[in-house]
Image (cartoon, rainbow, N blue to C red; front, side, top):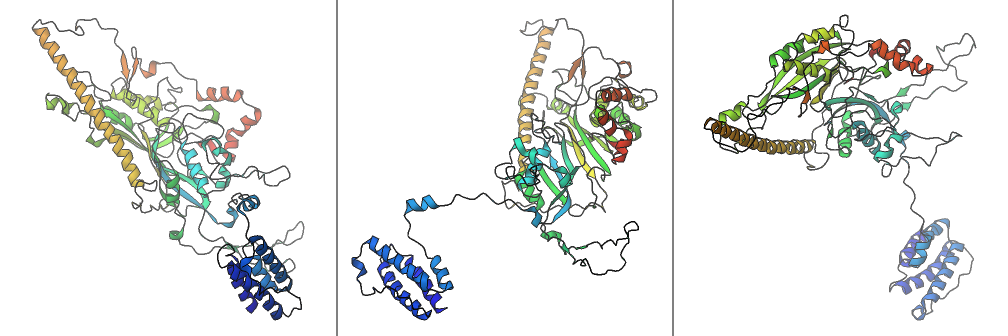
Length: 612
C-alpha cells in the first residue's frame, strides 16, 4: 500500500513533464525506483543517476531517461504499482495523438428488454386541417401527413415503444437495419419501424382528412418506470411437486407454472407519458390524459361504449346579397329531422359503401341527435367601418349551431351524409320525413345519389368508456415552461388567438365591403326613382336561368340547376351487388378471408366498418 501511495504521487508529478517541476519529478522518480526495489524485496539493479544535473539535459535525453526508469519499475513493482503506472499520462505529440485516437463508437442500441412494459390508454386531440386523417398507411404516400404518423414518430423517438426488428436468413438480427431516434425518425421511413401487433395498438374512431378530434383514444403497450416482474424460483427437474397434472397419453407430469411477482408501484412515479409525447408532437396534436390500468384485453375500439360527434355550421350559411334578406336555414325543421335518426336503424342509405370490407350489417344505434345553438355571436359584421344603420348590421350577424350526435358506432362517412340530409331539410328542399324514408330499407333498398357535407366543421368530440374500466388521469398542465411544446395551454391559446385575430380582421373587412355595397345599392335605388343616371350594372339586365345553391357546410355553396328531390334521383346498386362485384375481382383466398364466417371467427363479425 505504501508503494502504491508513492506511485500515485509519482504519477501526478509525472503528468507535469512539460512544466518547470519536471526536473524535480524526474529526480523523485529515480529515488522512488530504488525505494520500490527495496520495499518489494527485489534484487534487481536499477540505474542510479540521482546526482546528475537534469537541468542541463535536453528534452530528448530526459524522455529517454524517463522511459528507462519506467521499464525498471515495471520489472520490480507489485501489480498494484504497475496498475498505477499504467494510468500515468504519457507525453504524446498532438499529431500522433490524433492519429491513434479511436473513431467515435456508434451509440449503443436501446435495450428494451431491461424495462417493464404496461398497456395504457391515451386521450388526445388534434385539429384536422393539416392532416390526411387519423390512420397511417405504411407504404402509401399522401399529400399531407396522417395524425398517426406523427404519433408513431413521437412514440419511437421517446423510446416508449420498441422499433420493428429485422432478421437475417440465419435468424440473427440484421444490424444494418437498426432504428436510430436521431437519424431515422424522418417522415419517409417512419413506417419501416412500426410494429402495431407488438405494441398492442388499437384506436377508437377513425377520422377522415380534415376532420378534427377533441377526445380521440388509442391503446398501446409502452415502456414503464416500474421494475420488471421477478420470477419465483421454480422446482428443479428431479424435485417432486404436489398436485401435478398427469398427461394420460404420455403419462408424464406437467411442471408447475412459474408465477411472476409484480413489485408494488405507485403510478405517480411513472414516466410522464403526456409530457414526453407533447414535447415531440406538433402543436396541432396534444395528448390530454392517460389511463394507467385499462382492462388486460383493452381495445380502444371495442371497449368504447359510445362516440360523440359535433358538426358546426352558421345561420345564414353564406353571405347574403346586399339589399336582400339573408336566406336562413329552417332550424326547427332540422331539429325534427334529426330526431328521426335516433334509435336502431339500418343506415346503408346514409353512408358510403366500402365493398372492400364486405359489410352486410348496417344497423347502428344512435342515442342522441339534435341541433343546438352555440352561445355567443361571431365577430362577422360586428364592427362599424362605415356609417350605416347599426340595427341592420346586428340583424345580419350569423349565429353558430351544431349538430350533436351520440352513438355506439358509425359507418364510413355516416355523419357527413346525415348532415347533408339535414341541410337539404334546412333549405326547405326536402321535408323532415325524408329521413324516415331513407332509413326504411325495405321500401328504399338502394341509396339515391347525393353529396355528403364538408369535412372541416366535423369534430369527434369524445369517446366514452366505462368509468370503472377506464379512469383518466389528467396531469397538471405545467405553465413553468411557457412557449415550449410542453405548454399545452399556451399552445392552444396561440392557436385560438391567431384564428380569432384572422376572424376579427376578415369579419371587419367583410362588414366594410358589405356596407359599401349596400350604400351603393341604396344610391342606385334613389337614382332610379329620380331618373338619375348612375354608372354600374343595369337593374334591367335580363337574369339567366335560376340555379339551386346547395349548402354543404363549406364556405362556398355548390350550384346546381333545377333541384331534383332525393326520392326521384338515380340510385346506386344494392349492397349485395356492390359486394359481389368487388369480390369477383379478388382471389379465392381474399373472398374466404372476408366472408361472414371468417370475420366472426376473427372476432369482428359484421361490425367491420370505417368509423367516421
